[in-house]
Length: 231
Image (cartoon, rainbow, N blue to C red; front, top):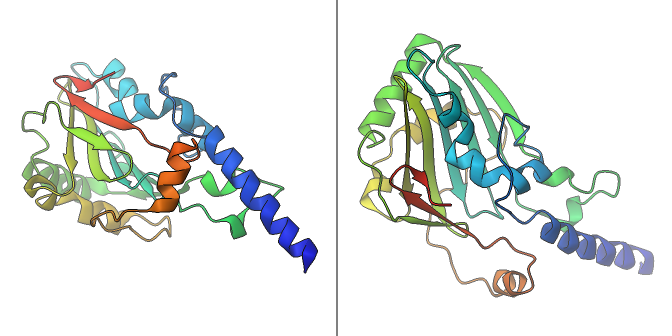
């Protein structure tokens, strides 16, 4: 019994230490690295969400691309959807909540790795997604100045469309967020096996507040600019 208690205490301590180690930083550019890997997300998240790689390759004649990211309270769940217009192919990734009982000494960062699946959309699926994106306001002027707290719910979209780069976002709660229609399509194609965290009011969490003050919980903000994320 004592050994089990010590093992659990050690797992919790290591979880806290590793959580601090994988807290987001904004330093590195994303160039196609495995964003499902916890350490890659740590260094490249702002660049990935902002679509720096999409912007760099977006020019007349390049295939359309979409990157849609659903933040459902950072420490609970993030869902990432990359859609390639040339192959009409979707890659979905989803993270899971952290749990001390699932910690493994053999793979200490394992539960931070995102589950992944892919799907061939075909022309019909691609057309449905583009139509739903447009109907959701994806091609409207971006909501400049909109803040997207990590400890909340939001969607972001970075895309290359007909040779032009764009970035926009939706934050819960809002009429714009409620009008999103592409989420149903993406969740339907998503075979990661990770249940979707539905957007809802975020209650006060004293444990999270304590972890935030101690640096064990991610507490960052993304902000929408006129031409992408504000850096």
